[in-house]
Image 1 (cartoon, rainbow, N blue to C red):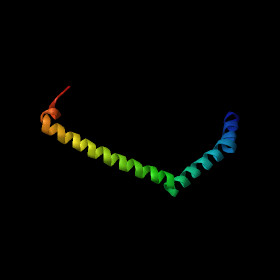
Image 2 (tube, helix red, strand yellow):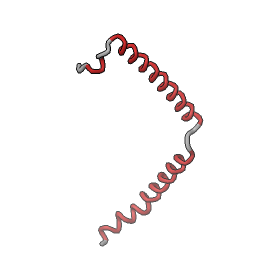
Image 3 (tube, rainbow, N blue to C red):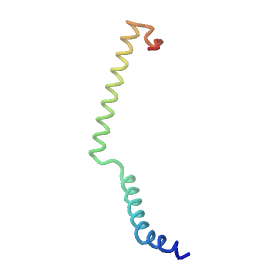
Image 4 (tube, helix red, strand yellow):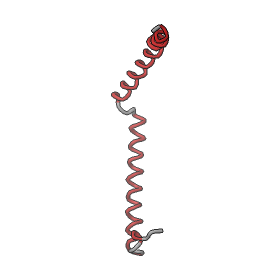
Length: 75
């Protein structure tokens, strides 16, 4: 029993408070939402993804007209 008391006391005095502080800090950050910079970056990524999607659709349309069997090729 004495063997377990020292690690338990060390855990309760040192590890548990740090763990709780970090846990609730991360919870608070999640509940606050995105910062202005993160929101701006997210909007930029959305715009880039939309552009990329349009480009892919255009390339697929070109390939469909020039090489109709390109989707069925197994290279």
